[in-house]
Image 1: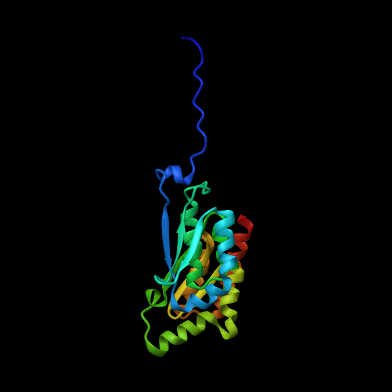
Image 2: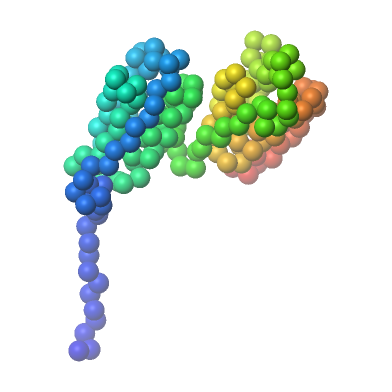
Length: 202
């Protein structure tokens, strides 16, 4: 009666066991503009999903989507969501080399918003605001990306930012300032000081 109680030791539960022996399934729609790039990049997308995450993946041309499924080799139940986030980021326009960071690095997200969420603009005013975000030859976008270590996609009037929470906030603030009409030089100087603070935190 006075002997110490030995706690039971349980082995890790596989994803298949966690879902009661059934495979879990996700579908990620493929927009028309990502069909050709997907065909070209398929092996770069397929390899980390199958080899690293141990998931099944296939393209379903009839339903125009990529399908993901757990199998008996899938160890972690979270990897299905990770793979879906990776594919969604790719479908938004991010390069495979950038989107794959969602599989390898914790605490990365994609934040999306409309230019018109920041300021109601129409016609030429909207076009000019989008042009200011990109800058000549994309210089402005690259400057924000490099200062904040994020990746930015500008698709029509929608903006997508890939990065950590704090870095997305800095990039988003810079983009919002440009949309609201702040001079580019002022946005750059604010970016430099904020980027310096971010680097010191790491």
